Image (cartoon, rainbow, N blue to C red):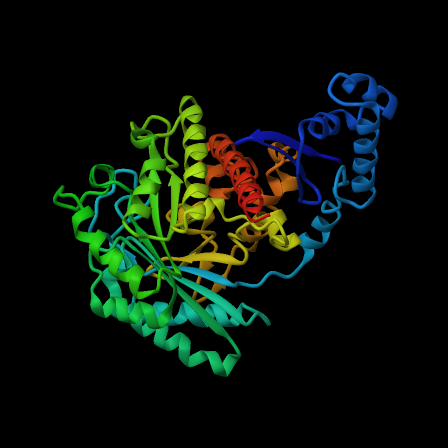
Length: 455
């Protein structure tokens, strides 16, 4: 199926050839001609556009578009569907684990999907025995893959920092023996962050995710401490120190925006004003009856905010004080491999979550739902049928993805969000899809604007 996506943004006429990934920034006549190309012959197009350009100019543009088509850069056919059969059959390996090192938290975030860090169950801290067994499980099930990822997650991982250190030490001791390279990451709310943790993180953690929701009033309302006090003043100086100690690389300040702060572009800009260079801001995903839930009627404002943020992003880049925003970092030159384009994060197959007592789930958002309990680190995966279901979760299994220009960028979206709103992993979270499409449009426009500046 041939698919072209055309849109206008910030004065640019942008044409995306979905199946090849080719992006074309064109003038008005070319933009209109591309829209007519598939359903009209050359003579009909000349007749329709003769008031906008000369016959010679229209004819020349038509021929250039035909050449692009012949070169596989416009109006290309979908060649990926044929790969999905092989993808179903291929042997999967575990390449990433999300270790729930602590089912406990020292904050009481209002939107926490994990039930204040306890995942609607009991408080618990992962033992070193379980952590070691998780590392062993990963090595045993990683096949020939050398690079493996382990994220220390919670609750709040630093509530179990001594075990974090010992698990890292254990993993490092296995690298040379099994020809593995562990990439450890840490997600923290920062309350317990101190010099010892920073020194350890800078030595051992490939990436650190720092949770902060932006401006003080926004953060302190949504992310209070257990005694109801704000967390902003506690954590921001620590985050600034950590970011500088890592040379403003290999970390993310990550926030969540809700219905309460739909002007989230100001929160991202606030990050930049605090000196942060690496940042992300994610929409809350919650039941629609929650007062902070994002609803369909919020989308126009959200789209405006992404446009506003994109313009500020370009402005600051041109001024030499740029920052990286996760959702604007798009690779138009190569992008992910075919398997990644089709199936996304690999939850339930290549990526698993481990509870403090060693149970395995498809990802952190499924933890606590026993319908998705895959097994445990001691016995391995005992519910291969669940894993096989996730293996088949791809853009071609989702009806909503078939006509979506963003499908190869979002890879079908989040399986957990699909299940939350539709009861199946092979649907899509509609509000999330709208936001993702907008972010991709902004990302491509930013590339065009920055390339225009360099030319």
